[in-house]
Length: 272
Ligand code: KIV
Image (tube, rainbow, N blue to C red; front, top):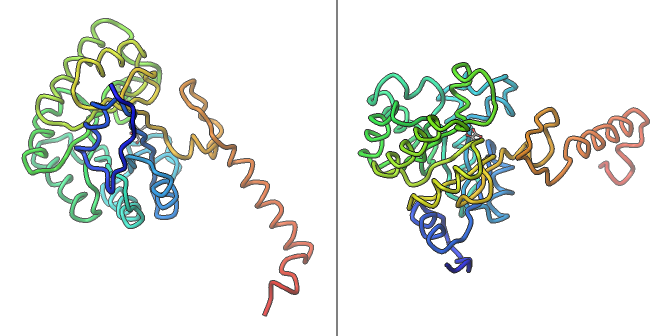
């Protein structure tokens, strides 16, 4: 297995499978706006996820459930305007695909037409099989999402690790296989035991992207605000913080406030 990195002009769903075949890990981060997407795209990220975590980090909701399809389209269109290289995957929000395959297709089409995103992501396994098939039949690439699926938080009751018990692990494995079989190009595995995630990644030909799923998978995804340290209450074990932006930004804001109050800003050079 070669780990040599190939330079892609644009990342496509096909590139991701090639990366898996070469043993090159796939990098994925969320983004929800133009400025952040510009920075993360030019840094060389492979996949940008316009996640429904926007409901938490952008809108301040406790769960991902309230965000609407219109709001997801707004975020996704802002991201698409920024990118030159990354593949943009957009979450179908809660309530936009669960009732029937036709509704799921209509929602996916709206995302593709109105935002310019390249693929959609849906949470769930066999319960949403017909919806995923319908979307795929329309030529829209689909990423699956198994394990902890935050849109079902009220069914689970907690955000703890999923599929620790045999029965749930078996269901997850068969759901992942089913998603591959019907044509999904990748699957996110969230908060599941590393051993199980490694097993799933080894048994599938499509890439498995993990979040809290250990190092044996084909790529990793994190929520941008968490890895930048802009959020501070959310401290799961799987999260690596690359900056402490909350404190950095807070310090900058305090300095600005103090400069304005003292009359230090603007200086002679900063006026006309
Ligand atoms: O919405 C999101 O950010 C996600 C990731 C946590 C995978 O689905």
